[in-house]
Length: 211
Picture 1 (cartoon, one colour):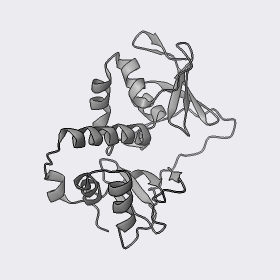
Picture 2 (picture 1 turned 180 degrees about the horizontal axis):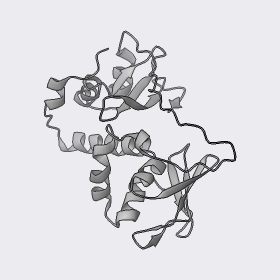
Picture 3 (picture 1 turned 180 degrees about the vertical axis):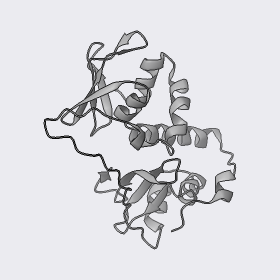
């Protein structure tokens, strides 16, 4: 499958109000799934300390104490314990950090869905082992199938996503079908290298999610 198509990337789509709402919902979900809170926090100047599967923010920002923020790396959600114990997403994190509304937070994060470079974030690892040189290796993507039948059936018929939206992600190389009939979503950095991969199963009777 060919990834990247400049002609399709420049194509403008016009959607009905219902389709636009559905597309906005997809964008919000991709933001929540694809941009790790801990890495975004580092890019905004926070120091992060790892504690198992959790990350804790160190210090204040914008005159607010974020030291009680605990980020769950597996669910990509966080809790600000000094405020309450509500589980929040990265959109909520930007709203809280920048003291802005949801629409502004989404517009801040939307450009980062496909271009956010995870390698730019430096997380402070709490460990007693000797320091070793950090090596970055390119993400190995799952093998693609020779068909997109299951992807189209699941996304357009089961999830009721407009076919033009599905086509848009496929032709830009951000969506394809693997050998096990899963939907594979891919994010690339500015150099065109894959930095994140997410799978969603197409079997409606057995839920499968993999990042």
